[in-house]
Image (cartoon, rainbow, N blue to C red; front, side, top):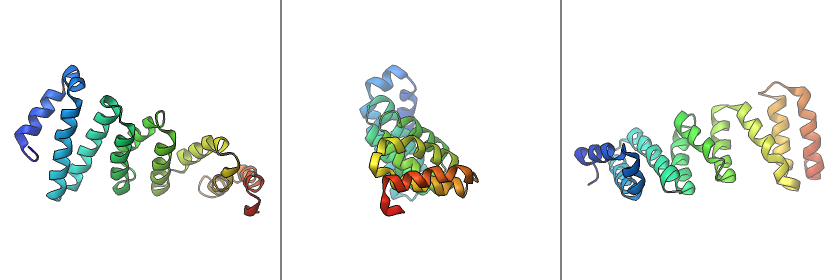
Amino acid sequence: VPDHAGALAAAEELSRDPGLLAANASFFADVISGEIAAAERSGRDEEADGLRIRLAALRGDHLQDTAGALALLEEVLARHPGHGEALARVERAMAHDHERAGAILEKAYTATGRHEPLAAMLTERLPRLGEAGGAVALRLGALLEGPLERPSEAPHFYEEARRLDPALA
């Protein structure tokens, strides 16, 4: 019963039992989904985002639904790119869905000015991109030359960008 305080409180209490939570994860996911919808209808956006994070944890940890968890976390980070818990969950999801989680983190890191982790992530991704990595190498050069204030490291990435994509010359 969405938006029923007693139902949510009972579900929260029951979900504290790890065995019960694991055995009934789909039920708890349905309860939280209903609560998200009720919070949205009532204009309680912050509450809805908190519930999205709880549902993402349930989907990722108990239902092996990384894609569903990431979609929920992306919604939260679209509104609050610096949300610590959402960022931490997406960072952990890199082990399961590197590309999708990386795309979400790239947006969040860019929006919040977290240049160091952005550069680290792009540096790690660059070798996997092969010839398609020119734009990423160019971006790394710009990050190093600009906000990271390490201009001596930038030429390596500019040269790599030109090597990978001569059109960037």
